[in-house]
Structures are given as structure tokens and as C-alpha cells.
Amino acid sequence: MNRRTLMTVLGGASLMTAIPALGQTQVADADRTAVQAWLDECAAAWATSDAERMFRSSADDVEWVNIVGMHWRGKAQVVGVHALYLNTMFKGVPMSLKSIESVRSAGPDVVIAVVRWSVGQFSPPDGSIVPASDDRMTLVFRRSPEGLQLVHGANVQINAIAEQFDPSKGPPPTS
Image (cartoon, rainbow, N blue to C red; front, top):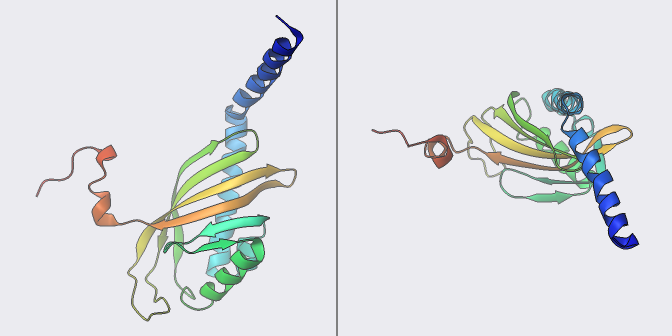
């Protein structure tokens, strides 16, 4: 074995021993606890229409995709748009966490969470009424010395009718 091959093997070995440590219960529990804390803070900020608080632990380069596909980039834009919406169409609209569906590591510095929220009825800028619904949110966090920092969020409104026909859940209901 030449020196280059040995270095590659040794480098790979140290990387491989570092990655399984991320899957250990202690680290997973710490990640889950940190994600839960972010979600609690998000719900409290929503209730008080405080976008600054909602994204306090976000990275400066955070990105957000909302339920209708708008894509906002950078903390200033993400906070600004949320502040506008929280103080208009979402003012007084209840939102509560239903479940944390998954929290997992995606490398040494990345944590991905999928969560489910319940959101009350609201009226968007076009004046229509959007009935109360559940949303599924994917959150990507970066580990930092200060803790988890949100770097990406995507929110999808769950279509309850379509969800009945999710092939991963088994055969659809019969009428």
C-alpha cells in the first residue's frame, strides 16, 4: 500500500468513526431537544406576531419557502416578510405543534426535522378564506458553537383528501 492510499484509508476511517457518533442516543436526544426548543420559540413568537423572535436563532443566510411556493433569502428578508404576514393575515390566527415526525443528522453539522403544525383559518391578501389545516414543515439546521441555527425552512399545506390516498400508507379507503 502506498502512502497516498494509506492516507486515504486513514482519513476515511476517522471520518467513518465520527459519523456514527452522530447517531448515538445522546446526540440524537440533544438534537431533538434543540429542535423542540426552536419549535416552542417559533410557536410563542407566532402567538405574539414577533418575527424577530421567531428567527432569532437563524443563520444570516437562512432561506424559507412558504406554503404557496414563495422563496425568501437571507435573514432580513425572511424576518421582514414574516413580520408583514404575522401582523396582517396571520394576526390572531392560532397555530400549534401537532408532532415532530422526524429528527435526523445529515452529516456532522446538519440536522433535518420534519414537523406537523395545525394552523387556524386565515384570509390571504386576495380576501379569500383559507380553512384551518395542517401543515408539514421541513427544517434544516446547522450545528454551531451557539447551538442549532436554522438555515432552511419549507412549509407545505397538507391536502387532507390527497393524504387518504398516500400509497405509502397502504390501500386507499373504500367507499
